Length: 116
Image (cartoon, rainbow, N blue to C red; front, side, top):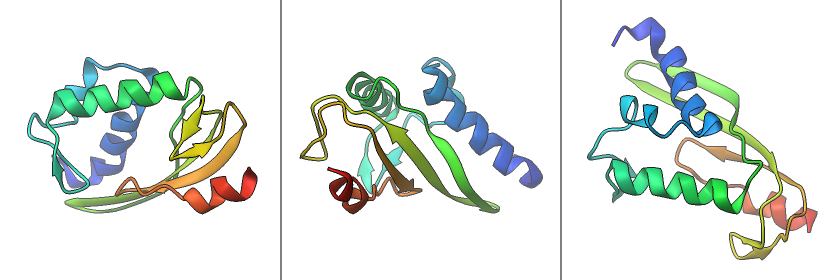
């Protein structure tokens, strides 16, 4: 991978779930992917994203901050959406919530709680 292209590659990766283009996901996610320290694999990772989009129909990952120092990349994603039912154990039930998620998929749950 050419180091100068790492931010472009990351944005292309984020474009896969945003477009729900699950077939292209394999271009960016390894069959042996580890997610938050857990061995997931590509199929389980894809199923997790598909479930997220089922539970949050208007889900869209907006890259708010992207820092790249090859071979590492770090990002903060901004989400503004209406999860159906419960989300992170909270009774969101279609209410619009805004929050951030960082590269380790840690969601700012306190921001959601403050909005409910």
